[in-house]
Structures are given as structure tokens and as C-alpha cells.
View 1 (tube, rainbow, N blue to C red):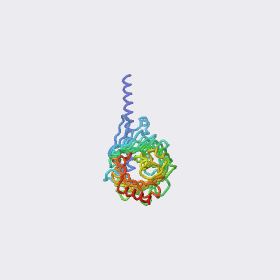
View 2 (view 1 turned 60 degrees about the horizontal axis):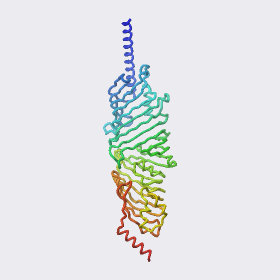
View 3 (view 1 turned 45 degrees about the vertical axis):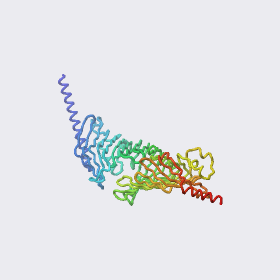
View 4 (view 1 turned 135 degrees about the horizontal axis):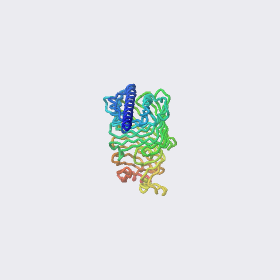
Length: 453
């Protein structure tokens, strides 16, 4: 009896092994057929049953049609549900893409490398994998249940500057777009840019990106609770417009709920394969939020209009020029009225001296970014009582500032009398020195002479 039982068990084991071997061959055949049809080259395929049934493709290479872009991975592994393997429908529980790179041309340096990501589908089967590839090529969703298009993504990579990139989200493919939930993205810089800032982040509860019907590829998008470097932009709506004239350029228009849907614009233009220009413009955007996004000291507040041009070489920013106009704001950390009241003939409300800040009607300045230095020209600040003019610069690595300004009374009869003040040292809490120089003494003598003549 025991011998018959043993033989039956052995027969059952051999039958199971034969069935699994057959399923393995079936899975490999389906995958090879799909890869060949899509023009994806694979060096070899491996199948393992433990700890999870996994089909691994080694040295995967794909040359994107109608371009010279190369996408390559050392390994791409698809893990299957054990139950689905027995049923023969090969449900994919996880896909891992390891040690990949993307090159604009096969022989050029990679634009991304150390590319690793995992893709966890809610309900994707091996025989439906072609539907996913079809979507990425055509942006069209083929037949299949809703869950077929739901995925969790976690991605890491490095760029040519050796910065670490991270992106994680749950996304669903739509008929004409994509919906993302619980999105987190970050860039950890290899080298400091300014101050001690090395990490920049983006988070959003929900993001919707849909294509528009047009001759070129345009998109509309919206985001809920969008945060850039922890600065909340609320609900953001916009459009991403491809350039019909310059195929390497695009235009992004944005509105945000934090400023009653004020407008921002980003215009990217390629000069040549190595160089590009980014033009940026905002209208009535809260300056303290903008400075927080840039992780710069919040020295000013108010509604800002900004125009900027940023020049990039090999996708890295090199120089930039910015114009800033701020209305009805505050200068943080210094009360100019208290500072100069004892030196200039001015009548003022004592209540204005209580706060360590200066309210202003308008502030204008031009900024030139050159390497680690930021030059400030044509600076003009106007309050109800004062007018400030000057120029200066900041070292963006040490965040040390040096500015020379002249402050006068906002009154026509005193327009020839201005007090020179130098602000220096730490940009967030600068020291100051009143420069009672030859020019100021000359102004003062002329002022007194005019008063008594």
C-alpha cells in the first residue's frame, strides 16, 4: 500500500514538474514573440520558480523608432502570481527594470543612467502586455478592464551631473491621458547650487494629464494640493503646448488657486542640440511663495511680476537674467524709517517704528546670475515716506551679500538729499553701515544753504 502511495506521489510530482516546465516554455514563447514584434532585443531569458515565479530578460535593448534614442537595461524581470501560473493566465504581480540607461544616440553619453524602477500592476497579464506597449507608443488604450491600466511606480536614476532623481506615484492610463495619485518626486544634487540647498521636491495628491486634439502634441493638466519644496500652490491648472515651429521647444501656461488663479508661463526653446533657453514669467504671484520654491531667503513679500531668461548648456543652467517688480509688499528684517529717521528731515508716525520691517508701495530690480554670483542693478524701493536706490551682489554659495544704497525722503523739496548706507554680510540678517562720506556732506551743505537763502 505504501509503495503504491509513494508511486502516486512521485507521479504527481513529475506531472506537476512537467506542467510547470510546459508553462515556463509557454511564458518564454509568448514573451519572445512580443519582444520580436516590438523590435526589442534580448540577449537571453531565464525562468526561476523560487521565491516567486519570475521570467528575466537579460541585456534588453530598444532603439526607439523614428529617432536614434536608445533605451537599455541589464535586466527586466516579471514576477508572476503562483496561482495564475497554475491556471495558465500568467498574471504579472511586479515588473523590475534594473541598471538601465537612456541615450539620445547609441554612441552618445547617457542622459539618464543607473535607471531602476519597479512597476506593480493591479491586473496585468502576460498576453495583455502588448496593450501596455501599444499605449506608450500611440497613447491609445486598447480593450481591457479598468484595473488593467492601474499601476504603482517607483523610480530612481542619475543624470549626467550625477544628481539622484526619484519619482514615485500610483497612476492609471486613460483613453487620452493619465491620472496620477500620491505623487512624490525629488532631485538630490551632487553639488551645492546655492546656500546649502541640495534637495528639491514636488508632491501632489492628484494630477491629471490629458491630450488635446491638435496637429501637434498638446496637453492639459491639473493638480490638487501641488507642493514645490513644501510650498503649497493649491489647485494648479494649465496646458503644455508643443511648438509647431521648433520641435524641440514647448510652452507651459499655469494658474494657481493661492493667488486667485494668477498666471505663470514657462517657454523652453532649443538653440541647438547642446544649448537651450528657458523664459519664465509670472503676474501677481506671491513673492514669498516664489522665494520659498527657489529655497531663497524670504527678504521681501508682496505681489510680484517676474520676467526671466535662463540659459542652459548640456541641460545644465549656466547664466540667467531676471527682472522683478513687487507691489504693496514688505522688506523683512529692517525698518528703514527707524534707521534713517535721525539723519534726514522727515516727519513720520511713531507706530511705524514698532515692527522690524518696512512696508513699501513698489520695488523694482534687475538681477544677473553669473556662476556663484548674483548681481543686483537698478534697485528702486518706494514707500510712503522714503525712496531707496542702489545696487549690490550676493555670493550664492556662502549667501553673503553686499549692497550700496542711497535713501532719500519721498518729498520733492528734499530730493537732492540722500543717505548712503552699505548693507553687508549674511543675506538673511545683514549688517549695515551709514557711509557719512564726502558726497553726503556736500549734499547736506547744499541743503542747508538752500534752506537759509
